[in-house]
Length: 410
Ligand SMILES: [Zn+2]
Image 1 (cartoon, rainbow, N blue to C red):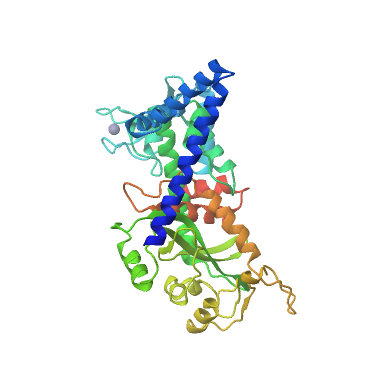
Image 2: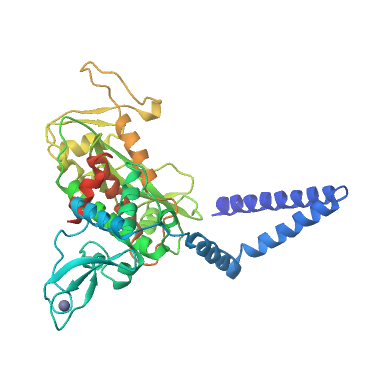
């Protein structure tokens, strides 16, 4: 306890010194460049006021409002909208024949363009005759009437095309696409959310069904670190377990929490499982995966029994493979000896280099701005959504992504 308390005091005192040093520096300057320095000082005062408490919240909100400001709209005409509808129908994002009228279940007639850009269908029932926006009839789109008025077929097509344009990289944010399409933020966000759900659901199914063969690389990584404190409720159990295991170690001020996942790779074929949260003291390395955890994750069930496993030196993989009845070899390189790849007699290079690249790619698909302490829903579920999406995209490849996404929306 004392050791940690002392360490913290030391850190605090260094910060104080740094601040005072800056102050001295400014005063020194003020003798020569009074005006400039006064302005600098003023900025500093404003900055410190603006970055705390309620003002910080207001500032954040204002920044967000500015980011959401609508840009000038894209040009449009009825012929363009009709062409966009036909293209969306061909891809599968719009139903080829509109379904029944949502009000009277009657038949819907031909579509027509109104207000210059919105495509409507009219109910042929003589008592109803209601106009229905084509975009509100799709099962994969958010089923709110407003969305039909906030977007048009040509904008929807543009959004979908830009959404898949990043290929295996991180999908573009709703802020960027809203500005590009000249739309307001919320409908764009709602559409992108639906697209992401389609992709990550497909990725989850793929992850559950895929069986890996041949040479399989296995490894664990940490997808996100979160600071947790002794008083935590959500992570109370792992923190208490850690305390029970380390009775003589000084109590750390906070723990870092590792959201782990385990996987294999043949470039396009990848299987990921979520491990239990791990609690480690601050600044510690991520802990190696334990045998029990590997068995619990059931990752090896997705690997063919006679496949060769390539691991990065965590011996638990050998034990887990033996216990789960795996018949193939488990080969290791030793990271602790700075050995990352190794030539072997069987003409296959040992090591997890392919998987390490894949991890990097998957991590870059999880946006750094994603809140780790979500107000609603579990953060790991949100992160997994991005991971499954990356998995699906990796399996499909960048070229045919638009067609495959259309098939998912059908
Ligand atoms: Zn009707």
